[in-house]
Image (tube, rainbow over all chains, first blue to last red; front, top):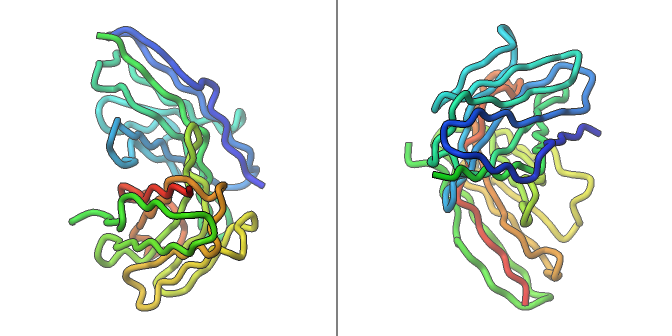
Length: 114
Length: 117
């Protein structure tokens, strides 16, 4: 069965610091990869996605992620975080013959100090 | 685009009772998903529909759980004989996926929080 791991449970950064959140998945076939964000009191929202093409994908709010197939990784990055980036971040993988089953990681809570 | 709507927002019930949640997806989204999320965890897949057809159900899901999407629009999730362990946030998501290859993002609702007394 596919699984998704996220390296950090809670990350605390100061504003303007750089961010990298790790995500690894276990599935040998073709996958679609997503990062979702959940701001306090809000529903999950899509940050970015990868399903083919350039392995470096750019999303909203200055986020980007790099798909490294050999490492089964899809790490999320942002060069300079803001206080408003405080949220929970979830990596998700979609695989299977019809892409029917989404598997989410446990999430990483990001706290940005002003 | 009015977003995915879930009702109720919060349900409190006694152990052993049945509960039913409703999800209204974004209009014309053909895929609808149900997830369960507990504190400190990511959403856990429960089941999904393509139009009115329920195409997959988690093997970990108890037979006490059932979902329907009778006309391919709104969906209901019913839990029978609720147990303490059913306490969680139940999330609904929808996506427009005409190609059926799963690479379209899901739009999530705010969820229904179930509390079992």
